[in-house]
Length: 469
Ligand SMILES: *[C@@H]1O[C@H](CO)[C@@H](O)[C@H](O)[C@H]1NC(C)=O
Ligand SMILES: *[C@@H]1O[C@H](CO)[C@@H](O)[C@H](O)[C@H]1NC(C)=O
Ligand SMILES: *[C@@H]1O[C@H](CO)[C@@H](O)[C@H](O)[C@H]1NC(C)=O
Image (cartoon, rainbow, N blue to C red; front, side, top):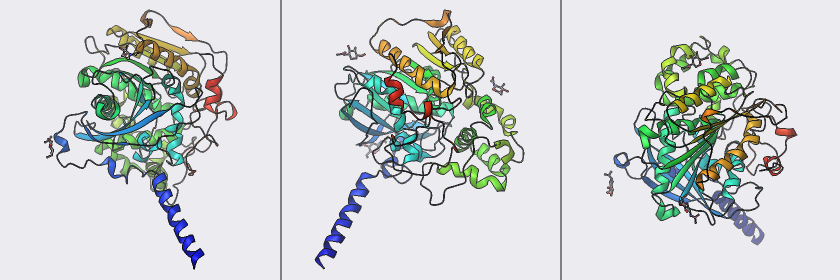
C-alpha cells in the first residue's frame, strides 16, 4: 500500500513537472488571445499582455550568455488593415544596451501558427518548431555576445493567422512589434527612444525587406537605423516556379500562407485541389501541431502543379494579388524609400531568389530613390551556404551601424565575394539542422523528405566557430 502511494505520488509529481516544462502550442495557449474585449480600440503597437518565458539557446560560439526572455502580446493589423494581435519575444542579454534593438525576423516559413518563434524558442517546444526557430538563434549569437550588445526582438511577424509570404502583413507586424518593444520599458527596460536594426534571412529577409519598404508609410515613428537583409526572394511567383520539383514543400507552405490571408484565393485553391492530394497538401497546416496521424510527406521533387485541376493557373488568375503581397519594390520611390542604410547579401546560385538580376534591380530601385545600399554577391553559393558564410558579415555591419562607425554606401559599386568553395549541398543545405544538437522533443517532421546538411551535418556552431570574423 505504502509503495503504491509513493508510486502514485511520484507519478503525479512527474505529470506536474511535465506539464510545467512543456509550453502550450499557440493554438491552445490562452496568452495569444486578448483578455479585454475592447482591445480593437487600442493603437497599433499597444502591449496587451506580457509574460516571462524560459528560452534555452543552443550551444553558442561565444560561450554561455546570461539573458532574460519576455513575451508581449501586441496590437497590430492584418493584410486587410483589420486590427489583429501577435506575439513578440524579447531577449535581454545581461549587460545589453537596451537602447538598441536588433529586430530578428526568423525564417519560420509556416502556414501553421504552432511553428511561431514565440513557441519554438521556449524550452520544451516540439522538434518541428525548434528546427525552424530556436536553431536559427545561432546566427545572431555573435551580435548578442558583447557588452553593449542590443536586445533582441523576435516577432511572430506572420501573425495569428500564419500568413507566410504575405509581405504587407509581415511588414505591419514586424514594425508594430518594435513599437511594442519600445513601450515595454516597465517590463524589459527598453527606453521609448531605442534604435532598431532589422535583420532576417530568406523568409526572415522577406519580412525584413517588406518592413523596410513600409517603414515610411506605416511606421515612420519607429526609429530604424538600418536593415540587413539576406537572401530575400524578390518575387514569390518567380520563386514558386524556381523551386517547384526541387523544394516543393516551400511552395506548399507559401500557398497555404497566402490562403490563410486571402479568402478568395483560399476558396479557389480548395476547389481546385485534387482529392487524392488533399490530405498531403492541407497536412502542412499542421506542421508543428503534433497531429495524431502524420499527414503524407511532401517529397521535394513533387510537382505541386499536378495536385490541382488547373495546374499553376492560380499564378495568372491571382497575379494582381500575388504582385501586391509578393513582389518587392512597389513602395520604393523618392521621398518614401528607407531613410536608413540597407545591407543585402545573396548567393549568385541561389535557386529560391533567382535570377540574381532581380536582386540587382531591387538594389537599383532603392539607390535611385535615395537609399544607401550595400549589396554583397556571394559568388557561386546557394541559399544555405550564403546563410552560413554571409551572416557573420551582416552581423559585423549591424555592429558598425549601432556603433555609428562609418559604413560604405555601396550604390556605386558591385561587391562580389568569391569564397572559393562550390555550392555545398545546393539549394537548402544547412538550413534544416537535424541531429542531436536540437534540444527539442522529437517529433516526426514530415515535410522534407531528406533534410540536407551543411558539410555532412556539422553543427552551425562549428561552422561559425571556424570562420574568421
Ligand atoms: C478598455 O477597457 C479598459 C478597462 O475598462 C480601459 O482602461 C481602456 O482604456 C479601454 N480601452 C479602450 C481602447 O477603450
Ligand atoms: C547605448 O546605445 C545608444 C544608442 O545606440 C548609444 O547612444 C549609447 O551611447 C549606448 N551606450 C553605451 C554605454 O554604449
Ligand atoms: C514575377 O515573376 C513572374 C514569373 O517569372 C513574372 O511573370 C512577373 O512578371 C514578375 N512580376 C513582376 C512585377 O516583375
